[in-house]
Amino acid sequence: MWRKLFSLNIESLHEDTITQKAFALIFAVLCSMKIIGLALLLFSSCAVVQNNDFVDRAEALMGDHYYVYSLPFEKNKSYLVVQGYESKFSHKGDYAIDFKMKQGSKVMAARDGIVSFARESFSEGGASSKYVGKGNGITIKHKDGTYAHYWHLQYNGALVSVGDTVVQGQLIGLSGSTGFSAFPHLHFEVTRQPRISREDFPVLFYTTGGPKFLQPFRRYKAL
Ligand SMILES: [Zn+2]
Image 1: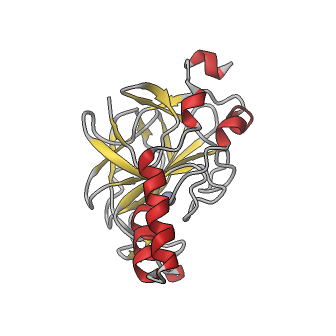
Image 2: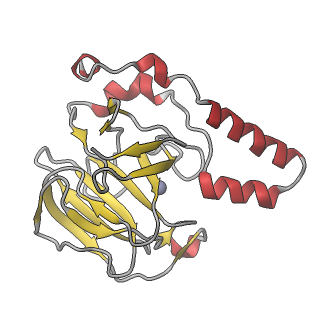
């Protein structure tokens, strides 16, 4: 049903992009040459190829949640997706999107809701386990009971407070790289539970090409 609703071209989602294939090849070559450091740097800075098998399961994963989100940044700005759904770096089995965003970039609400969590006290981040659970973020509860999480915000980067009502497109925060984060980016995901990474599921976004599941290594412009 949702496929008809959003007239999605599911077939196109099964094709890995040339960039993704090239990236995977470079990664494999670097590994075989034992240049693991460089391979890992590439891996952590861009994160690797997405498995698009989830598209076959998307209908079941989404359940009744057909909502199409706006991209969580300023209109007319475009940002690169560096990790998508079920990406093999840190989103294994997760339905989260990482947008590469410079520190201090404006983060906008992707959907109306009420702020249920906001934290901006942490100032550090990195790709070490010691930073896990130490990221700044905002959680917004939607009227259908789902939650959107906007993560790795900069110190003092939460511009809304718990209990605030926010509307789609409203400025809510400033991106950063706090917590478990190898480089400045915005981690966005939607869950059925109040906490991040609990029962997350794939969502569609409005793009210049219509509602889509976002793909890694592509830039998307907010409408
Ligand atoms: Zn992420």
